[in-house]
Amino acid sequence: MSLTINIYYTGKNGSAKEFVNEMISSGVVDQIRKEEGNKRYEYFFPENDSETVLLIDCWEDQHALDLHHKSPMMEQIAALRSKYHLKMKVEQYTNLVSDNHDFETVIRNRTATRKFKDKNIEPEKINKILEAGRLAPTAKNFQPQKIYVAKSNEALAKIDKVSPCRYNAPVVLIVCSDKNIAWTKDEYSTYEMDACIVATHMMLEATNVGVDNIWIEMFDKKELKHQFELADNMEPICLIPLGYKADDYKGNPLHNKRKELSDIVTFV
Ligand SMILES: Cc1cc2nc3c(=O)[nH]c(=O)nc-3n(C[C@H](O)[C@H](O)[C@H](O)COP(=O)(O)O)c2cc1C
Image 1 (cartoon, rainbow, N blue to C red):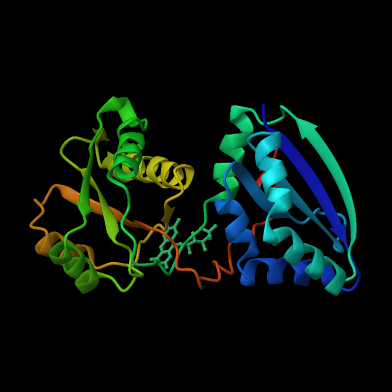
Image 2: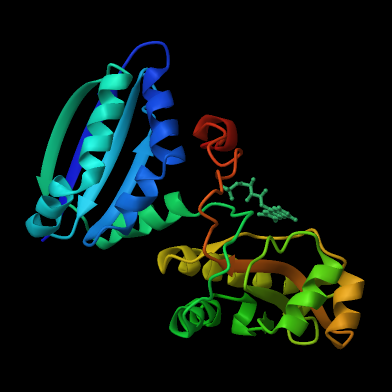
């Protein structure tokens, strides 16, 4: 059983958004996410109410929720709520978290990380991430992907030579595609498409296991091939730095700037 709690905070003149910003910048959000039994702790801004923020809070069981209620975080939240004069409405559900919700959490939590802390990634997590890349679909199931895991100081130094975008990550996946293996017809090949799907699988699995990540296109492909002595047919597609975001990383300012569905979808 798990418990989901929806809390609506409503204020005036954007105070609900300021409240959220302070919750994030003061580290309250991160600390609650690390509390035992916390499955989810997120904010959403309802489309038709600019003065309200919805917090979705999910706990493994009543015991985890009780512990949370006794944590020092509660006092901090209450103080911030009164600082911003917010009204609060609470709804609580049990057993509402299905696998689909968890998948949705992953989709919503994935975001570009541009500052990693000096902390290694547990090998079993790296394996899970790589396994997600193995299971990705590819054209005709030809599986042209080849992943190089840059982890040694020497390999990371090579990455730094070819890209400014490692952001101090302790591990970088170099996602490549073998043009000799990928499905090809006339001039057309799916080598890039296949590798992008593989990379997306791995990025989402990384988020799923709590490993922060980013997709990097900005690197010198020719120099990377030279540094890692890749064969001509081995095409580097992207880099995925992996790690744990630095405590003072403020988040990607573009993350919440998504177009409306109506701007990107046409039902025909
Ligand atoms: C194809 C692609 C290439 C990207 N290349 C870079 C890059 O070279 N450097 C970088 O800092 N971020 C890069 N990003 C990260 C995007 O800027 C980021 O995903 C985008 O702003 C959306 O934000 P979000 O990932 O936090 O939702 C890239 C993302 C994609 C999908």
